[in-house]
Amino acid sequence: MSRLTLGNVFKVTVALLFFPFMPLLILMIGVRRKNFKVILEGALYVALFLAAVSITSTLSAFVGLGVIAVSGMRSYMLRDLWLHRRAPRGAQPYVMAQPSVPAQSAPSSSAPEAPVDPSAQELAQALAWSASLAKQNKARIPTEAYVSILETCQTLDAVIDAEARQPLGDPQFEYELSATVRDYLPSVLRSYLAVPPRMLETRQASGRTPNQELVEQLQLLSGQADTLHASRHRRTSAELTNTGNFLRERFGRGQGYDFGIK
Image 1 (spheres, rainbow, N blue to C red):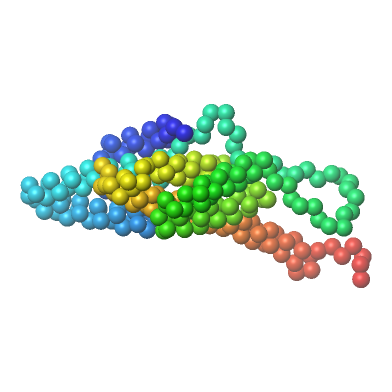
Image 2: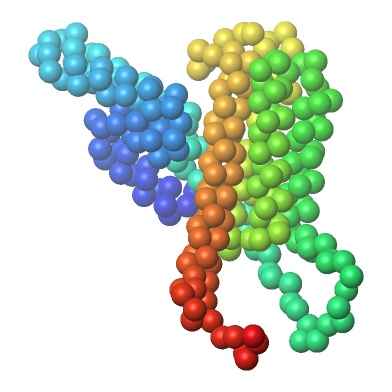
């Protein structure tokens, strides 16, 4: 999916116009995504830049420019955290309509199982494909990365199951969940498995090996999965509290109707 959106163009334009503050961008990305590793990295860049600015010398000028350049490269490498991908044209948003209830229905001895939206089934199938691909290539994937994949899949599966049964109706949340399951995670796995085994410990232009890249990218995806999970259940808890407040106000303190029942 392309990142060429109006919002992303605006973000990149602002970043280029205020390029001296590029170290601060890394820190803001980490804070926005609650990624402790990126926060530390951004804080280090900001500290180095401030130290270089406070000292007037040729060396400090080079250090300051170097920090800005490195921050710019890192902001590009972390683009998944602040430049959202555009949804494919014609793709259906992940919205599940509430099941209609007939006006009159015969009583049933057992409650029927809640229907599952086809989009939720597609997400679950896409997630199962990623988990299956990882299990089939367990021997090639580093142990730490393999465990991270399974834990991320487990977290995302819980989010999909909760969203299927009681959707939030939040387009941004639905897009982030769909993109993570259908695009980000499969893309990371396919790209890694496409690297020849003999090159997995060879340092690339970024200075990291494919194994190191895999571990770092999976950590980012794990953080995204945790964020989706926390956001989903935080909103559910808030809805339950709101319902409780309404019921307490409506029926508490003897304000309910007794319909003549003694």
